Image (cartoon, rainbow over all chains, first blue to last red; front, top):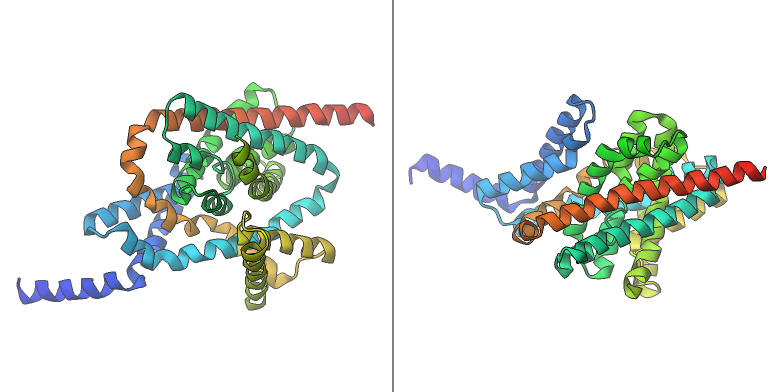
Length: 241
Length: 116
């Protein structure tokens, strides 16, 4: 090896051993994803997280870094998930205090939607012969990703698969939501928004805000309540199914 | 900003403690969320520092689950083998969830309008 090559290799060993590389990679990839999302006018397929995951995966493959090594560095970002979950209390509180009068029908609709999301996903996957690890990860997938991953851990299924399914669910919901709601002849913004938030959590909420502010407010309330109810009820449901 | 972060971390800590010793089935951060929500409902307002931190988190929530989601590389063979069933399950699930939630809301809202 030439002296120059040696130097670069030394720097690389130093960088890849510290959390800095994983942190730079994670945040830069997200920055690129976010830029794409803004440039395409928030088109659901240009989801910033999906783009970032793809970019990070390609980078790890190119530099031949095992996922475990990357995660050791990136765990500082991962740790904040719990903190972010707690902070979701604030938007839920704002939603509840402004929409208190409609809370009962909203909760009923949320429960029906939540049960349907689990039963349909688990049912179809079982029918088509998916394996147990995949089916288990379907249970919390309509819940907002940070909470879904916490539920997955407690259920003993893979938080990673759950997070990926949650993101795909969100993207599908954001892309198809308006069409489905139009076909059903739904005219009220609050009903449309709440359905989006229940089925497609954060990504659906972001879409709902782009369509109409009232839809967005209800979508974010649906996402928050679904998170709380999901964490309380999904472990019970899974034991009985 | 700092005071908001301290409040959130304290609620998270309390949630983790309760989850560890009393309610192992519910994740600590979710318990922290529920405690903070009850606290806010009782107090009836959100202080400025708390809402600053919370808005920052919810604006870029996505960045926080990248490290875990990249783990999908470990599941690629498994996912490839079941690609069709996974896509079908997710598609059917999201369509039926949106439809059922919307229809239930329309039904209950109509009944409300009749009652009043």
